Length: 368
Image 1 (cartoon, rainbow, N blue to C red):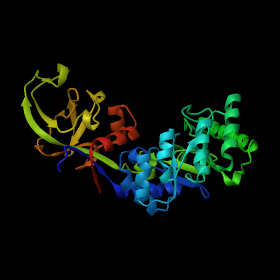
Image 2: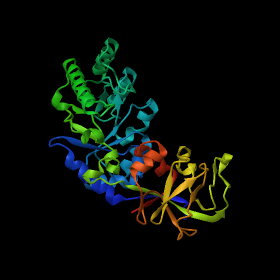
Image 3: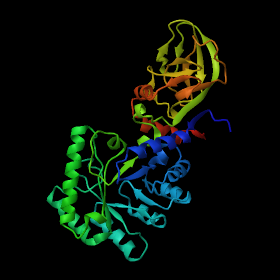
Image 4: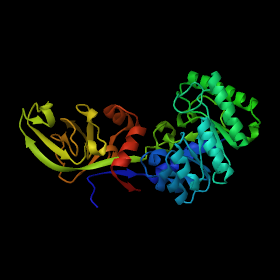
């Protein structure tokens, strides 16, 4: 295989990032390794063994396909779905013992039926909105929400082994408020049920929560981004994916030549241009037009013209050594030149988690 563009996945960095993250978890609390979106584009089958090596006993996923891969890798710990599921998904995941979230009476009744026929495990997670994401969780600050919650509690009883939420912001002031409100709502649930606090896993908080200066009250942190080096490089976390391509053509073009679709760019003088084997099909987003660069050798080369489906054009006039077939660094460290996370996020106007997930799913992956 000779891929036109590829992601290099650094497994040793994932392991090191996980080690550093586990060191940040306060004593007595749990850690859930979030491997959703195919482990943020890194390949879930490759990441599960790294998680197992360090004794992590809880993994978070979203899809049934991810659950199957985790179980196929030999993971026998808790497997939590990090969103509510459709009835079809719940049914399809029974064999993999996925712990589901519940926020509606219909889902509660469905899971109850599976429990009563010994097809579902022991633990369900009651998902509370806590004035947060307003996505799929139950808002118990309202009368109707409280009525629904009481019905869910009546149907599932002590099979509710977890109560969870997702904080919408990790700004210190807002995080403190969200944590306090969540704990108030957890207390309300416990007061209106036969549940015992010691038997319930109360969990909230992501990678950003873990590295914040706010000590939130949570039994378990659910962390994904930090595993892939998206946060806190000053603490030793390193990005775990590089994106590369190759120079496929080198041509000299005269001053005034238009470059790319719609003649969106024109050369201000004679230029040597390199055609590179990556485009928006591979996650090099069209929004980067006019404000991005790649690195070739030890130098940055500005991208010229609009982004094509399978190609970009870079100005290599000042890089005398470039040759057809040379590697091009779109992100990460190659040959000493670096496209940093900050540069990538600015060029593509999105967060690194979005880019990693997109690049990993669109390009051939090479594991180191």
